[in-house]
Every structure is written in structure tokens, then in C-alpha cells.
Image (cartoon, rainbow, N blue to C red):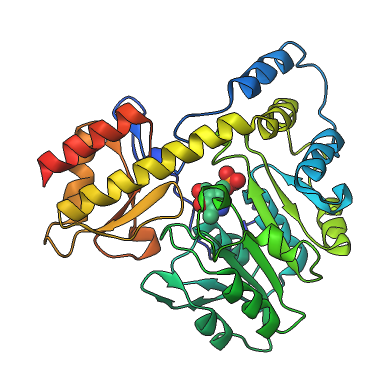
Length: 358
Ligand SMILES: Cc1ncc(COP(=O)(O)O)c(C=O)c1O
């Protein structure tokens, strides 16, 4: 008798930045778009408090945090789902709504997790071409068929760092068939300063067919605690909450997240830091004739074609100097790297080294 055979799953495995390196080698990690300044000291204090009482299960409904979020963003707490990272929300969405042979549309260069979970639950992925690394609404709409179930997109987009305007997003929702679920990932919205931009939550908090996701992994600096959330129509969020693992968010994450949301001062410090360094990075890349676009998130996508250098070589040389950045092979963006903005020391070192390499 043989053991049960695993299901055949036709999806790539997610490769995290650090798994390529031993932590010892990469002292400076600019590969995962984590926060530059780390969590609010108030969140760390709360984390340490929770550490004194580890024997208790967390609240499986996360009521306290849902109420804090609802108050902060003027939302209905019943329409919030908490996930072990927004990652888990994407999985729950696929698990709940995606069936074999459904089609899921993602922008050509978009967060890889959307396609991984969609494939795991049997969907066929349709890639919508981008124009100059910007999501194209027209190209998304051109991929719609009667099998389309879900459209995923992030705004700002990862790994390109570009945004689409509020007008474009509203147009997309209007032109998409009403029974297609639109998932808008607001992971980096806090960093954006552009008058034509509005985060998904602001645009669609009353929509019947949009789920918006947010995360504590980026600006709040809590990537290691794994916590994110989603907001959507009552019936859809109810369905997701029905199947979520009961204790998917640990107590430390619940309480540290609630505390970090309140620390607006810390948040503004991180935004100011990232916006300042984003401009400095951009200028340095331009000086070196490395192609890039000014980014709306906490990272920049750079291409080495113009200066005829191989991104592989740059990646290795940076790594030899202890700096880990993100390769773009899995995204199929040729000869490019994605660089996360770090703290002052890390950024200065990165700029010094890249100048020396080039
Ligand atoms: C577009 C996008 N969404 C979400 C996330 C964060 O996922 P999580 O909340 O699971 O940490 C990332 C992190 O890289 C991202 O780039």
C-alpha cells in the first residue's frame, strides 16, 4: 500500500529575498520592501508586554484590533477580516471564490503571490500587459472572458513602484463585469503623495464587488509578526471569516498592530524618510545612467541595459559587500533589480558601493 500522493499543484514556490543568502553574509537587507525605521517603539513595548503572558490563546475574532481599525479608518468592523499577513487574505480569497478552470487576471509585473494562490486553487492566469511598467486598465479589460472570476492589482504596484490614478481605478471597476471580484492591494498606499491618487479603501469602501487589502508588514514595520487585513462587502467578508483558521493572528501581532496604528508621529517619520531617500536614490541612479522611474513606494526598480552591465553581476557584487537586493528573474523583468529604501546608514553604504561597482 502506498501513501497518499500529493495533489499536483502547478504553481511556482514563493522565494523570499533572504532565502538566497545566509543572514551572516547579507548584513544589509534591501530586498523585501520592509520598513526603513522598523516598528513604532510603542508597538515594541506592547509586544514585550504580551510576552509576559504567552499561555493565553489569542482572540480568534480579533475584535479589539478590528474596532481600532474601524475607528481609525471610519469603517464597519464586521466588514474587516484579519490575516496572517495580507498574504493570507489573498489565499482565503482564492480558496473561497476561485474554482478549477476559472480565470484570474493580474498585471504582467505584479506581486507574485496573487498568481501563486490562484494557480493553487486551479485558476488559469491571464497576464495584462503593462505600459512603461504602469498597469494598463485597457489591457486588463481586454483579458476579460466569461470565465474571469477575480482581478488582482496593487496600487502602488510591486515590483514596479508605479501607480494608477483614482480615475483609472474607478473606470476599471465600472467597466469590469459586476460579478468579477476586484481585489485592490493597498500595501504601500501610505507613501504616495500624488493628487490624482486615492487608496483602494477610500475609493471602494462601499462597493459590492471590491475587496481591499492592507498590511502591517510595510510602513508599520511588523513583517515578522505576520498581520494584515482586508475590507469588503459584508457577505464576502463573512464567507472569508467562516473559513479562516481560528487563531491565525497571534496575540503579540494583534496588540502590537493596534498600538502601531495609533502612533501617527512614527508613521510620518517613516514616510518623510522614505520620500527623502527615494529622491536621493533616483538622482544617484540618473547620475549613473541607470534607468529607473520615480517610485511611489519604499523601493525602486532599476534597469542596467543602458549602461550595458548585467544585473546578475551587480547583484553578486552588492552581495559580496553585504548588501542584499531583489532579483527580478521571477517577475521576468530583464536585467533589473529592485532596491528597498533602508535606514540612513544602509542607504549611504548602498549608494557608495553601487557607485564604486559602476
Ligand atoms: C504588493 C504587496 N502586497 C502585500 C505585501 C505584504 O504581504 P504581507 O502582508 O503578507 O506581509 C507585499 C510585500 O512584499 C507586497 O509587495
